[in-house]
Image (spheres, rainbow, N blue to C red):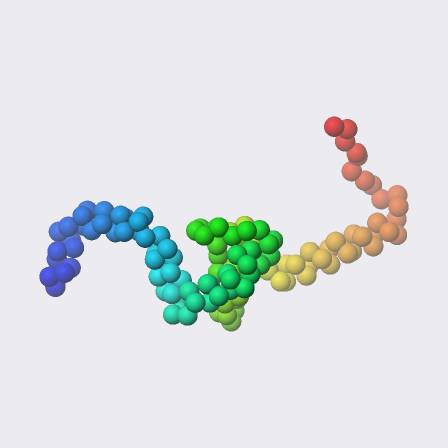
Length: 130
């Protein structure tokens, strides 16, 4: 075992405290490092450029993006290509949509719209009084 590893094992608690203190006092550096690790060396440049091009607005809902956890760098999972900057909610929603599912959902709604147009006596949900 090398000296660094031995020292770390003997001082784990001290190391963990120092790491936590660094992460807490340098959140932006941590985000930059995470982006580079996850998306490659040019990811942070793309992030800053795209954020500027979007006027610090979410590319989908156009709400103001606040620096921090709410800003997400969107990417295509198949091609790994970086796209725009999204808010946390839009990124989560986009992540749950699968193109095949969307096509099936649209077909389902269109089918029932046709049924509704053909048969006006089809059972309806009773209207509720508030």
